[in-house]
Amino acid sequence: MQHDQLLAKFREVKAHLKKHKKYLGRREIKIAEKHLRKTPKYSLSSVIKDRYPTFVDALRDLDDALCLIALFAQFPQHLTLDVKKEDLVTCNRLYRDFMLYCTVSQCFTKSFLSIKGVYYRVEIMGQQVTWICPYKFNQRLPFDVDYKVMGTFTEFYIALLRFINYKLFTDLGMSYPVDEAEYPWISKTNSLYLDSDRIRDMQASAIKMFKSGGGAGALGYEGNDDVDEAFKNTPEFQGMQRRRDEARKQKSLFAKCTFLLGRETPIYIIQHLILSFGGQYVLQDQVNELSEKEEAKVMKTVTHVVMDRPLSNADKAKEYIQP
Image 1 (cartoon, rainbow, N blue to C red):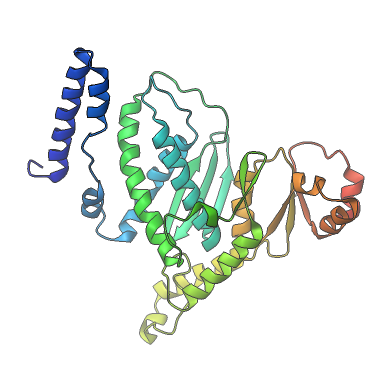
Image 2 (image 1 turned 135 degrees about the vertical axis):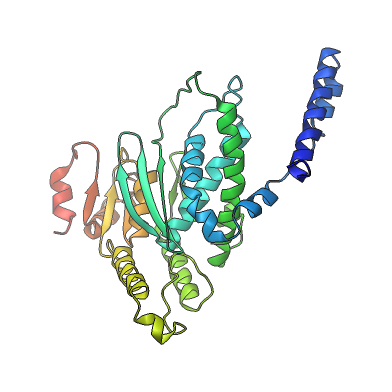
C-alpha cells in the first residue's frame, strides 16, 4: 500500500487542496481558482484490474454498482451535501448506456415493480445481475446520510461500469462512448424514448454477430459446433442448453404484441422490457398527433393497452384492438 501509485496521487491532491485553502485564507480568489483548475488527476484503472482479473469477475460484482449508480442518476444537485452535477450526469449516461445494451442484446430475464422501485434481472455471459432502480420522482435528500462515503463508492462504480459498458458495446460491434447523434432515442415531451425500429435493426445485427462468433455477450451459447462431444453429454452442458432454450422463448415472448402506452404510464421502464422481449409499442401522444385515418390504421395493429387510469374512449379502443 505504501508504494501504490494511487496513494501517492492522493497525497498530491491533498497537498494541492491545502495550498488552495491557503490562497482562500489570503483572499487571493483568482489565484485560488486558477490553482484549483490544476488539481492532479488520477485513474482507478489499476485498482479495477487488480480487483477483477477477468471480465466475469467484474460482472459478479455489478449488482451493487448498478443500484448505487441508478440511485445517483435520480438525485438532484445539492452543493451543501457535496452532490456534484458532473457525477449525476455521468451516472445517468452510464446507466442509460447499460440499459440500452440490455435491450439490444435481449438479456432481461425478470422484472418486478415494487414500492421501493423497479427490480431488474439480466443474464450476461452466464452471470445473473440483479439491481433496483428508483422511480423518477422529485427526490428530497435527507441530511442524516453521509454522502461523502456514498460518493467514494460511486466514483469507483462509475469507473467499473465505464469499463463494463466499453466491453459490452465492443462485443456488439459498436464504438463506445456512442455518439449522441447515433443513439436510437427519440425525444418526446422532454423525455427520451427508444426508437423501436432502430432497436430491431440493432438486435438483428447483434444476433448475426453472436452467431458468427464475433461476440460473447448474452447469447454466449448459440453455437455448438466447437463444443467437445464428451462435454455435450454432461449435466453442465445440458443445463446450458435448457437456459438457452428458455432465453430463446423469452426473447420472442412479445413477438406478436404491439402495446399502446398511455402518457401516464412509466414508459422509461416498460419500453426496455417490451423491446427486449421482442415486442413493439406505440405512444399515446404519437397517436393523438395522427390524422383519423392514420390513427385507425395504427390502432388496428395494437394488441394491448397499458394505462394507469380509466380509458376515456374505451368503446373506440375496443373497436380497433384485435382480440
